[in-house]
Image 1 (cartoon, rainbow over the protein chains, first blue to last red):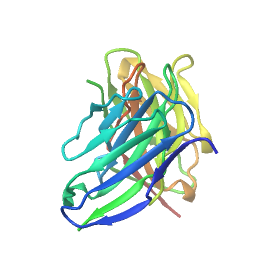
Image 2: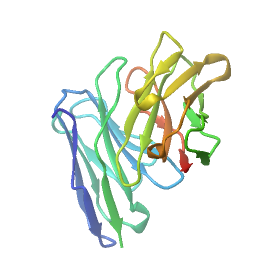
Image 3: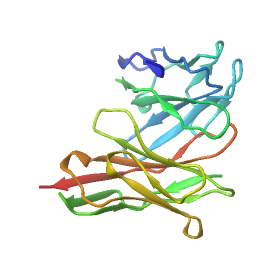
Length: 112
Length: 113
């Protein structure tokens, strides 16, 4: 089925470890986004990309890096995980013009 | 900058009662407006969206929302709530171009038998 796939679905990290979350979409969408969801705060934008090879900071970018080497993939990296990064991470994509956003099913990350 | 306010953090209604969840947005031009629902431990499901045209929008699961430009609101309604509607509801505003969605903080709906 066409859509947005996030891997992994669950992960537990120790403080200071690094990891990469992968977001893949097969809809040829130009725009891709990474959000984090925390209780009582809705979803907040971490980074986004408007096309292959481009990335930009969102509302809460500190502690994260991203890359979009291929149009279909948007990677979110944590170089040195901190307990404050315990969250549920959602990836989304959309095409240009007035269109809906397609969300992945989320990655639940716990940093201990 | 765009923003979304959902004034009600938690709402409890009886099964069969009507429901209205409030959403106010701030955006300089005509916004794209969305309502999503999230069950515990699950992802986001799109209930409905408004881009243009008729200001009363019908969605899935019997939900509807009305765009009122004069009040900067996009409230979600359902005439008769079912126990399975218990979940968290998010209002979001987007726009053309590269803009990401901006979400409200959510309203948690509890349904009493």
